[in-house]
Length: 264
Image (cartoon, rainbow, N blue to C red; front, side):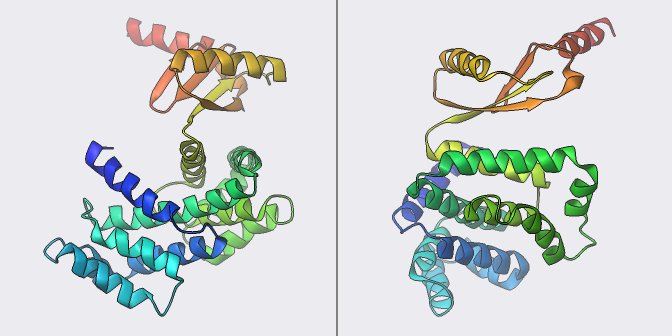
């Protein structure tokens, strides 16, 4: 992401964070994102760079005021005022703020750690169940049916915010379910000024091992981390760590792959 794009997102975060966090705000923002994504004329009107910034903002506010809450009007109005790289970036920004609204609800309730853990477990469940993964990804099936499928699996077992995010992840326009959930987890870590370290190991780690590994990685990276452990027997021993785009490959399979590549 370019520095300019990051600056635009950060500025919109500040406006959104000034609004009271609520599930209603998230629902409003998701609804607007869906409407803008599905209506080319509306999308053009709210992102046309030839229209003055304040005029786009005023148009968004006038269109939305009768339909969504005041908090959503403020966020979407500010998003419309910003000059994005394209209409898709505008929709993505609204989606991001809907996700952040639900994360902020959990944070206000002191339940953000639990939400992150639940989302991670849902993502791993889907990844480990091919039939479920295929059913959620089947765009020939109605979206509401696919959302009911994941909702039925988690309802009553996780936080309401976790369920809402899992259901929303099924509707992702550009990513698979697992990658969408991973982006939600990254947003949760970002909310607390952390990075996500995804650790892949051949066997489960003990709590003590996780603690030592987290301490070592935090020292190496130089910032606070949230640790996510994935057990994959195919790694053939060792540890594979991914922090953002940086990958530390310490598995036997990884070293064998590197050796084969060098010999090729």
